[in-house]
Image (cartoon, rainbow, N blue to C red):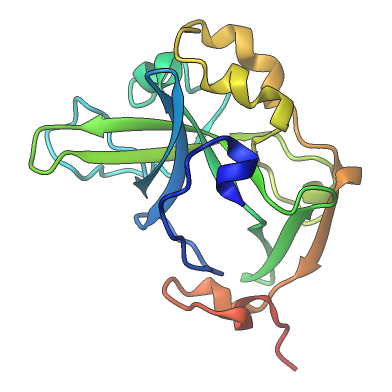
Length: 209
């Protein structure tokens, strides 16, 4: 389905995952040499100038308003854009200092794409490729759980514009960073089982009795 929907050649066999955490390998679609390709990258961007393949601060997402100016993301924001496919995502609501996950999907797109950036760190062997997800202000659905950010979700009509490596003027793409309409999304509670990184399986989406 990824090959058909995102215009890449079939190749990678992707396992079904219910709990994708930072610092794991995730599928990414980028454009290289005029063609789209599917690659696996570490979720958590490592800038090319970093002396080590680890970053001391969190880089699994970045505010879309700041990506063009922060040194960690500035180079990627100019020319290394990518799509990060998903069929849903979690956000957490905090109640009495406990975190409760909610699962969000799109009504009319079983699989969609986040706007992402990718980088290549080549100070070691093998080189490390990594990525991050852009975020924006929350729509009304996310505001209901008092969440202050949400991932940037792209319309299929905008995939080509976002992936175009010849467009090195990030400001021309700011229109893509508007929150996805709340009316086009669904939300339901998820199981707190998903709160622990490493927990996997359908239980993540099944509310415990």
